[in-house]
Length: 196
Image 1 (cartoon, rainbow, N blue to C red):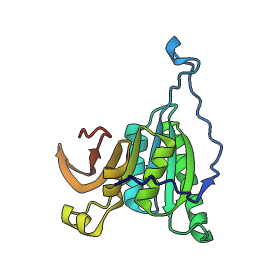
Image 2: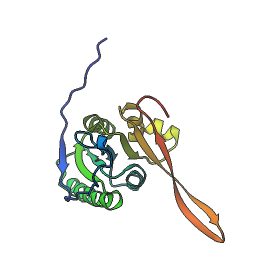
Image 3: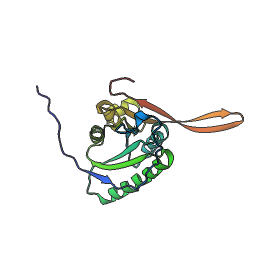
Image 4: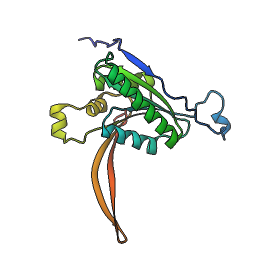
């Protein structure tokens, strides 16, 4: 039996984002100069849902650092839908500005056509990021196995480390005489080598 290599063309469109250029201080160590690159590439799969926004917020707050580049990817089923393209353009511009304001990172954005899980894995192979960050709905194991899940597909098929942000339950805790409400997140990190 022969392995069939999948080399298919796919449709995509770059999204023009506002020109926000982070000011990076000069390198402190000699080994960081010249050809050595200081920033990392981080791919974040986004859509118009709240779980995707939570994953984006988590990545910008906890994973990104100065001189990194985030690659925003949105997967659509049809590239010819002007309304979806326009709404995605606005979403990616907003997220790009927010990422710059919070973490001083550069953003690149791309709209890709196709099956969401497959397209995200294909973009991860093209970009070669240190991590692929995505949100999930937080469904049970049985529901995700029966219905399928984009994050589960990427968890098993991505060649780079997927970071899946599961929205947690709201948690009340006491501090002194005050009651605080905090949104908790469960983070699943899967290394490409199979470590958990």
